[in-house]
Length: 141
Image (cartoon, rainbow, N blue to C red; front, side, top):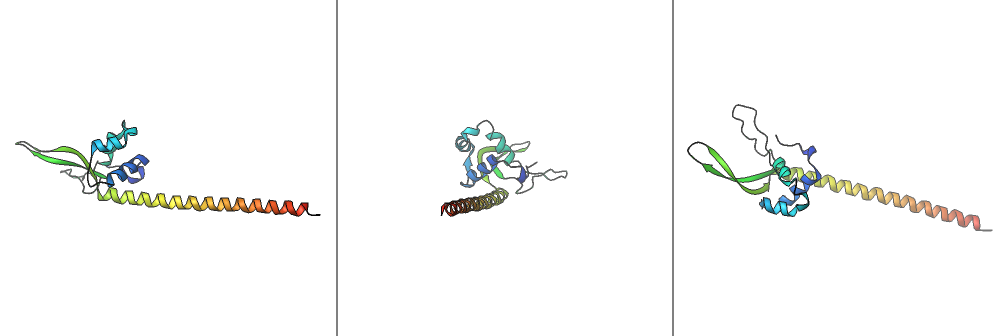
């Protein structure tokens, strides 16, 4: 089952943002880019590429239910249809939507933090000015 968007980690969003920069990117390139996370990158990629499945007798995948898509080529033999991984990924529409929402929230948070900092500095500056004026008023004969 696919992970919920509210359970994605900062690292997941970094991976989504990196993959979004390409039409398709090889797993080795992702691993190289995130070399400091080398011990967990395969796990995070598997989680991000895990689709949801229908709950009926056929158990088929639900379209656009994963954040990234692992590309594969079909292998057809006499007994069953399988797929061989190409070790390449691209971001899905769901992944793009979740990433855009996340980046938008981050931008709003950043603006709010800047606004709060401005008001804190402004209040501090006003306090300092008031103290200086008070000191000058006391020193005047």
